[in-house]
Image 1 (cartoon, rainbow, N blue to C red):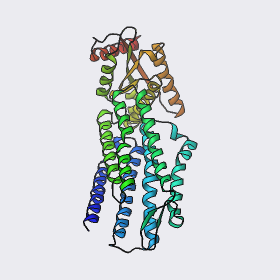
Image 2 (tube, rainbow, N blue to C red):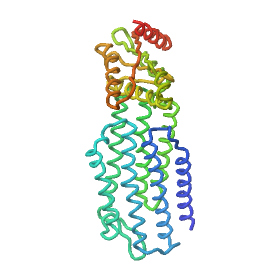
Image 3 (cartoon, helix red, strand yellow):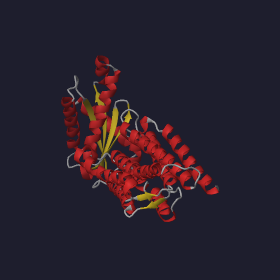
Image 4 (cartoon, one colour):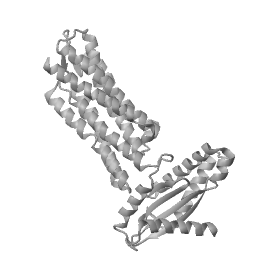
Length: 378
């Protein structure tokens, strides 16, 4: 009785804990799909915990359920923890990394094949015993192919971990790098929990370990909210200044970096003619274009609030500084035509070069703004 009480207490605490996370995940913590997937992970975990609790009550002799139902509950638990959750985690990580991998239908289908395999094998095991078997007394035993669902589970997590580490190595922003390392480290707690459950068995290690990992991701989402502009999703000024400070450590005349101060022009006319909601949409479109172009140059773009932005690009990625301005304007023209906008997305851009670590960040930003005014007058 003491064992089952402790087991159910752990499951209940984990259940409540995930419920708190679910309620506190807000839509502004990430894009809509990221938040939906995060919540879906928590919901599937909760359902699996309910199934696990019922099977444990049955296993300890406190309930007498039909063997088929017990087998179904075991299959559902395996289906969730070895298939659904790793697959959802893959989707979540790819979205956070801004990867184009899952935007392709073929890649999405291929990535779902292991999930489909686990799904078929888990529920087919009710009759075949491939992954597990449940006898007429409702007692669970592992099947001959039980290890395959573990392999599928860890393959998903291994892929996302490697991808996050690669992204972290190539990410220019120290803030974003930290977030990618958090994504890469997610696998540690579930992996350790899985090992314990693998060798000890009949103990609830995986669910609490996974919920702990989800807490770290929740904190990561919270930090994103603090570091990002709520309207555009771009980094805010503090993040940009931290990035500039990081670049200044190794700067020289031979290894400079460039700062671009960018302002949307004509927004008042857009607000007056089409309304403030459309004005906000115009700001988002410009932000999206800046993000696309700046990423191409391996730089960082942030919002300074309202209609102003700041882009920072390492000199090694620029053969001609003018190319960045041209690329921005070309991207804006492309978006205007693609979406058939009834107005023009126009910006003024000022730039400055930093070739000395002694110049302050505020001076650099101010100089770029002054150059924007000069170029606009010219």
